Image (cartoon, rainbow, N blue to C red):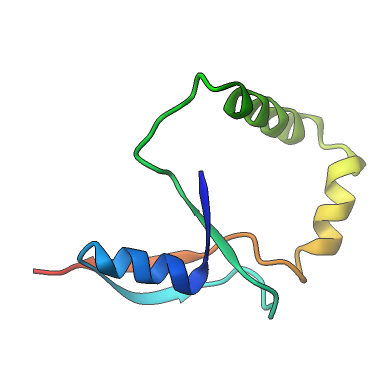
Length: 90
């Protein structure tokens, strides 16, 4: 995964011939917002990717306060995702 600021992500998408026409930010924040794009390189066998995947699965299945409380407190302050609607240019 790669992390981009919203304006950088939109610039990269536009450079590839895609026309962004709307964005949605799940949180209303002024902090730097990041969005993730899956790159063309699929390195699912890399140890860091495997460890991150295990942590995500654990977080989803365990529902512990260790991750839920900080997430609830930080969600209004830190943008974690963005939705960008695009059209392919003719």
